[in-house]
Structures are given as C-alpha cells and as structure tokens.
Image (cartoon, rainbow, N blue to C red; front, side, top):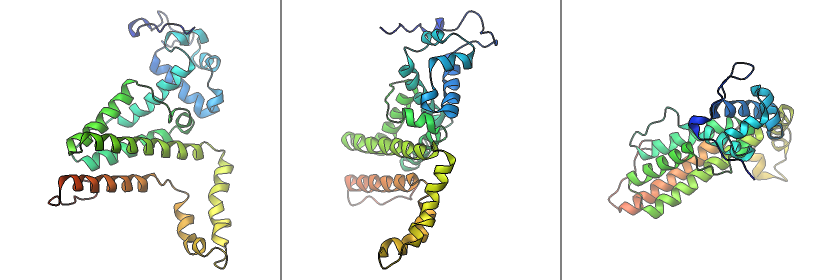
Length: 246
C-alpha cells in the first residue's frame, strides 16, 4: 500500500542531512536528473538517490508516493524548464512556434529523462500551465473549440514524439551515434543510381539533413496546416499572415 504524501508545509526535514542539505521536492528532482544523466533509467533507484542526497532512501517517500510519482515530477520539471521566461506575444503562430521549440529543447537537453517521461501525463502544475497556455493561444486566435482541441492534440503529441525520438538518439553511446550518422555518407551516398536512383540523387541532401532533428520542419508544416485551416474558417476575405508572426 503506498504511503500517504506529507503536506508540502510539513515535508522539510527538521534537521539537515549529514552533508548539511535540507531536502525538498525540487532538490530530489535535480538529483534524479543527475542520476539519469549518469546512469540512465536503470540507475534511478531510491537507494542511489538516498546515497546522492546523503539520506535514508525511505525519506524520499515523504515527498513522493513512489518512484513512478517521482518520474512524473521529473517530466513536470522539464516542462517547467521549457516555460521559464516565456510570455505570449499575442501572435498565435509565433507563440506556438516558441513553445514547441522550448519544450523540445528542454527534453533533448535531458535525453535519459525524456525517454522516461515524454509519454507520461502527470497532471502537475507545469504540465497544466503548458496545456492551458497552448489552448488559450489557439482560442484567442479564433479557432473554434473542436479545431482548438484538434490542433492542440497534434501540436503536443508531435512535440513530445520528436523529443522522445531525438532523445533516444542522444542517449545512445557516442560510438553508436557516430556510426548512425556516418551511415548516410558511407552507405547511402555510395548507392548507384542504377539500383537506387532516388536515393542517389538525394544523397548529398540526405547526408546533411538526416543527422539533424526534423522537428523544426515538422512544426512549421503543422503550423502551416493550422493557419490554412484558420483562414478557411474565417472565410475567403481572410488573408494569410507572415510565417512566424500571424
């Protein structure tokens, strides 16, 4: 049976740990991110966290119901990192473009954590704030509610899907990443036009593009589609706006 979570105001230890640290939820999440970066998802255990924080592992359950609850908090922290410093401009396309890139960047900056959390729904404060912000941007832009939910769904899932994909690549051993990147030059670039004409003609472009994230391109394509749909809903008198400032 999971232990009850102690209310926030009672969570802090009355005395520091042996290293002089006063525990908090944020401090535990920071330590968990370090462990994930150093050891991957299999290295994130209550025992290792206790060692890292110089406390008994059971102390962690004063802050989280279990390791899965901690996982949700880690994901929420990544979203909070993405939203930090962002404010809407009132230009719906520019705002969604900025939020998408920020979320993607926050996740790929912590690839091991991204793999663990990108598919999760935490219901925590930062996640709710991000969802509210995206929905508000779309509604304020004039999207009807059904279209708002449709675009929101595609926007969020696409952003997190690319974050998970790119994080999985970054989490590979360095030698494996180099080998994957080199494959576009060592194999694809050498295929003869007689057997693979389309790959052969595209090989120079493929070798340059396929080693980078496709998320910025996919984001632009999604926003293009949303903008075209908004113009359609507004009627024939509506004129297209500039790419990142409509």
